[in-house]
Amino acid sequence: MNKVAIFVDVQNIYYTTRDTFKKSFNYRAFYSSISEKSEIIYANAYAIDSNNDSQHKFQTALKHIGFNVKLKPYIQRSDGSAKGDWDVGITIDVLDAAPEVDEIILLSGDGDFALLLDTVKYKYDCKCSVYGVLNLTANALINSADEYIDIDTKWLM
Image (tube, rainbow, N blue to C red; front, side, top):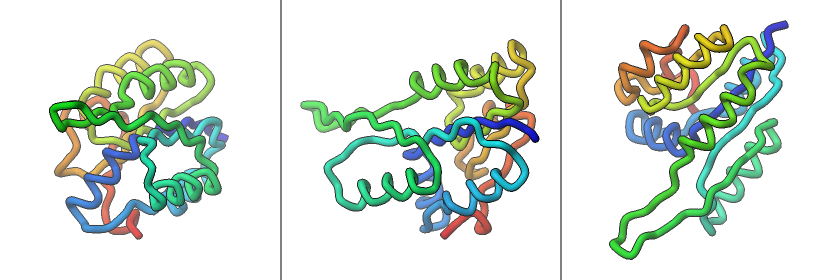
C-alpha cells in the first residue's frame, strides 16, 4: 500500500475555500478518501492558536479525524498587523517525512512551497500531490506538483 504524509496549511485552505465558495473544506471526507487507497503515516494540520471557542472545536474535530494539530500562537503586532506563518514548520516536517513515505500530499496554494516540492522529488524520489483552490493557487506550486487536485464543491461541506 502506498505510504503517504499529509500536510495541511489550515489558514490557506480556510481562506481560499471561504473566499471562493463561501464554504468550508470537508477534512473528514478528504481524510477518508486518502485512507481508502493509501496508508497515512503522517497527517499534520498547521493552525494558529487563537482564544476562540469555534477554533478550539475545529481543532478538536481535526484530531478526532486523525490529524496531528500543530499550533502556533497568533501574534498581533503593535502596528495592527498579525503574524502566524507555518511555512518553515511545514517545510521541516515535509523534509523529515519524505524519506519514510512514497507520497507527500500538501494542502495549500502557497507558491513558497514550490521549491520544497522540487527538492523532495529530486532528493527522495517522492511523489508530490497538491490540493488547492485553482484560482488561488500559485502556478509555481501547481507546476512543481506531480499531481494537482483542484478543490471543488465535492471537497466542501
